[in-house]
Length: 314
Image 1 (cartoon, rainbow, N blue to C red):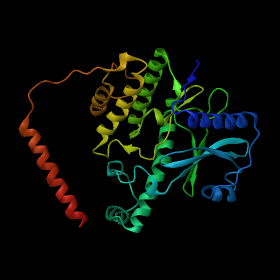
Image 2: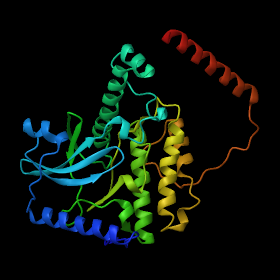
Image 3: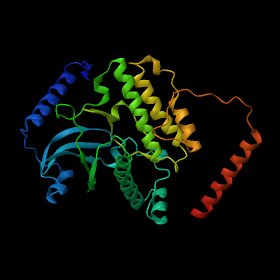
Image 4: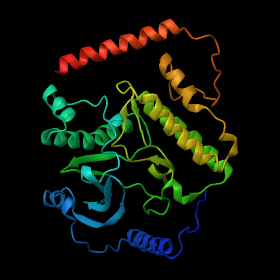
């Protein structure tokens, strides 16, 4: 399978970035490392002997900076999380719902937004990705293999392409129709595997998928949610699936009208979802009259339950 990098869209700046990328990849392939001053965020790992050498910076995103490091004979990546004030997800409570904390004191502090509460939120945010990676790797989901999280830095396997260079993002790969259909089918299956493991990515798109030598790998999971413990689960899951449809349908128009999110969620609610279950991307709408009284009763019960929770919290 052959992939082609897309043409530069922003002129000289994009070409310069791509030239630097090629130089970095050449250095990795030939094992001619460029000595780099140890970044402050990685100093603790170097001092503890968890990282032997910092090779270079791979990328800097909205939530973290990722470095290529050497650990003994293995080349890995170290993801250093940014301060909460710099992250795009810091004010989105929909991702925080359902996350477990050690005790009720921590939960109250997080709700109030105290200094201690913000510290706890930061720890929960960072541990969410570590926990998700271990659970998903055990469930057979295509994610980087995690090794440890220390001092706010996640150490995991480096995802590489066929030449041993850092794998490109899906957004940087040009696909033909057959490849788009194959990748879409694989990623839908991965989303099903994640849901069967009780996890929803929450921000899945072409920017959070790498194209490794053997196919797509899903990355960036600090905002991952508990499917059973978050009231926004379906909305976030559906958005992930729609993002995949929107991207791949540009290469494979047949995907444009697919309804995989609703089909998958229906099987999930029935308790029969499995990675081996054949999917069609089609759903049959239930056009029978709604039971308005039953709906109003559920709303009333939800309001009462919320009031009881609030009284207990006070």
